[in-house]
Image 1: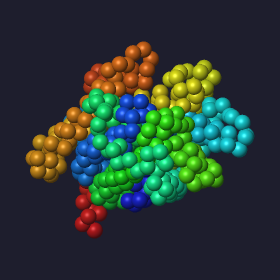
Image 2: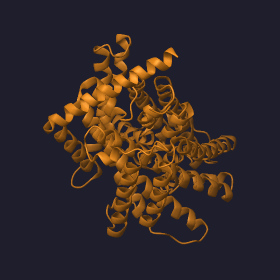
Image 3: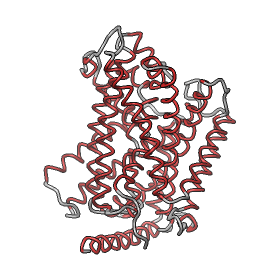
Length: 476
């Protein structure tokens, strides 16, 4: 077994890359205006609290286990092979859908950038294919190279956001309303509206646990993976709340300002242009394109590693578990995931489906598959929160009894989020597609008992091997 390559910053970069802060801040706030009004910063503050509850579960379990299956292994090691398989199947659906949607939004952002230079528009199916070909190639290189690229890309976007936030604060926000701190008060907004809006805000943190999938490739995983999880949630939590506050007061909290915020195609780009200059707006738009690319890069990497983890336990062709010895990447799984993304985006582009009512085919495809992936992710998160409590009862993790309130609250938060995602779902919608994926995973786990037992036995053996390796490294 080769020596792990990734350090703390590498694991952190994978999480940041998959979340795509610049992508999230450029396009996730607009959907909250209709229900929360000027309370967008409050919604993100509450979303930060909810994600922190979910993160606790991953931090507790990854301090005990490390494995390329992420929640699949964490849940399986505590709740049994069938629950673990369901969690893994949910995560595979998540990152497969994210592979599709992030390539689509890359096309949307790239076309917006090209329009600024009068270069016309490319079909998003073609731009998505180019994006996936590049990410497939990079993901067949070593993980250190990929992590460095992710860190550089998101570093540019985060630096641009911080500069914009400081300028907006320095200029006192929009002349009509100024720095309005009432955005953090729930006045005039119902509880249901706040909860429904937190669902949308939660999408911005989807994928914070991505670094857990590199447990086997990370140096001192039981120390660095929990640190990376904590760091990614803390950094993005503070950043998201500040940026959404700055954007809200930047557009203005009156009716005209909120209308401009809601109707913006790229909020950071528009604010950058109006507060600093056209050149800065272009820089931010470039950062958004790169952020979408980085998110796709991480999505393909994580989907491939989950596919590899399942395949080597007997689910799917063994070829999917093939690893390139030179670079340590699951190259067959990488190419497979990228190929699926190319096919779906080309079909979506040529057929005009799905139609989500935005008027932009690429954005329609992005939101459809992003929501589908997030609903799958929520089921995996729910099982992880339950797994923490089970692990504590089995004395697999050390924690005070009162600490179990945290994963219990996290599970409740997730159930509320799932409810507001699926309660009005009908027909071929993102929620129904996600539910169908989860149901198929549950049926396989319940019907294929020998497969589940084989996965469980293999998982136990690999976790024991990882425990022995960790103890030897600690003794050394």
